[in-house]
Length: 319
Image (cartoon, rainbow, N blue to C red; front, side):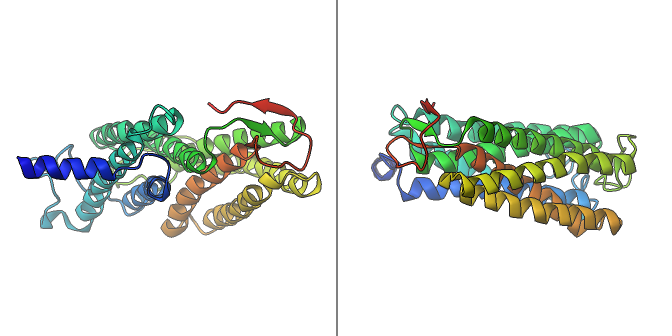
């Protein structure tokens, strides 16, 4: 017992007392893991492995792990479930890395606690997904939660670098409004994309139901907010350089590149009959797009102590 207590004490002493490199690394790992979960979830769906483990929480009535008789579908589905445990470890470490200075940095403490709890919610929704026979709306809810966690992961990364000091908005009001409008249309694009996928051929299992909506029509509807987002992003990038708003230059340019790639992949997958690899890439890019859009919105402000290129339009206090 003394050995265990000493080890625990050494571990406690080792934990950060402020934001340092370890905290930044764990924040990036959290964001990467949340995005990877969408990739593995997409692999489950696109390989028809959604019911590779036909029950929950066990993989079979007798086993928590997949069996040889279940073949590759069981391995893929069980692998996706296993990633939840990896996410939980990362989430718990993130909480521990902020625990000692949680009073000073309540913002990042809350942003680490949410993933630690939400991983369990993901597991519950995943279980309902299996038990409902891959109901397309439940599957869609699973994806929405993943996107929310990716967005919060991006906020956490931003916060561990920015700090919680007073901030000033360096963008004029019209540009800030345009950026928030772009974020709205990104959200609409993702939601319509979920409905489009739910109407298409990739159900995750041959016997899974579809939502019954017109897939061809939804593909067109899905593209409309995407093109609006692209147009708004072009305006944001141009304004970031011409006004100028230096804090927006890199994130908005990155956002524009990601949108361009996402649109190319989306058009290609529609014209090629929805090949699995492109659909999976489209899903992962949706998470990357959401993270990049979040970073762009957050960079509308800079620390009040940092030099700004234009007269600040409004003073804000970071939460």
